[in-house]
Image (cartoon, rainbow, N blue to C red; front, side):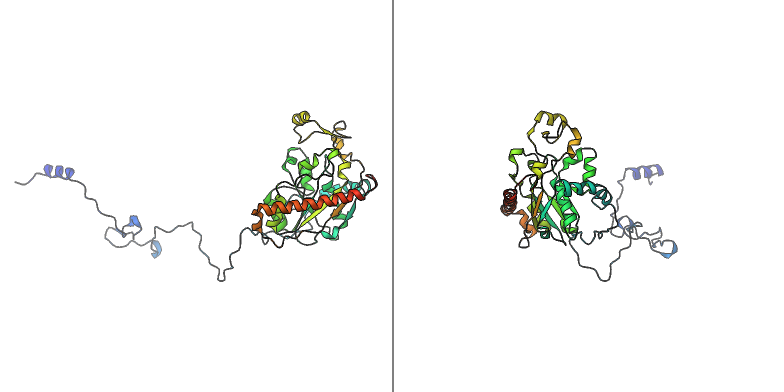
Length: 345
C-alpha cells in the first residue's frame, strides 16, 4: 500500500530545496530575457531589450581629426582677449574708478611729489614682466606713483597690477578701493595667470610690512627680500625681473615711533606715530609731506637661461633674490648721494 496524500505532502516539506546554478545565459546576469516557453521575448517595436543599456548616457562622439592633447594648466588660449571697452576686468580693476581717482593721483605725481622718472624704456611694452621695488612709508605712496609713472611716461601706457597682502581685506572700503585700482591678493596662482597667461606687468614689494614699518632713522636700508618667492614666481612664469629704485617715500610719510599697545587694541598691523597720525585720524592718509620723488627703472634681468623647474633650487632662488636686492640698494644709494635736497631734489 503506497503512501497517502498527507504523507507525500509532509515528505515534500521535509526535503531540502534544490538550487539551480546561475549561468551566463541567465537574465539575472545579463543574458537574454526568455518567456516561459523558452523563446526570447522581444521588446515592443521589434527592438531587443538589453538590461545593460543606460537610457541617460549621452551618445559618444569621436571627432574625425582629433587635436593633440595639451597641458590643461596652460590657460592662455582659454582667456578672452583684453577688451578696451570693458569698465571692469576679470581682476576687479575698474577703469571708471581709476579715471575718477586719476586727478588726485596726478596732483600728487606732478605737483606734490614732482616725480622724476629714469629708465622707463626698460619696462617691456609686450609680454609679462615682474617689477620689484623697495618699499617704505607708513601709508606707502610708492606703489601708486610707480603706477602713474607707467601710465604717464610709458609709450604703451600698460596697466600695472600690484600683488598685495591679505590684510587690506580687513578694512571696510579699503580692500574694495585698492582692488579697483589694480591690487590683487598675493597668491602664486594669481601671479602665474597675470604674468604667464595674460602677459601683464606685475609689481611686488618683497620687503612687505618690514619695509613700510621702518623708522625714520632706518630709512633707505632695504630689508631682507623674504625667501625669494618673487624669484620663484618669475621662474615659473618665464618672465624677466625689472628692479625699481624709489626715493622720497621715506620722507613723505615717515614713522618716528610705534605704539604696540595701541596696535593690539586697534587691530592695525602697526600703530605709527608721525607728523599727521594719530592726531589727524583718517585724514592723515592724505597728509603726505612734499618730498621729491625719483623713480629709476633698471635693466631687466632675463631668466631665459632657466626653466620652471629651477624654482625648486633654493640656492639659486636665494642667490637671484639677493642679487636683485643688492642692485636696488646700490641704485637707492646712488640716488640719495646725488640729490641736494629732500624737498627739491
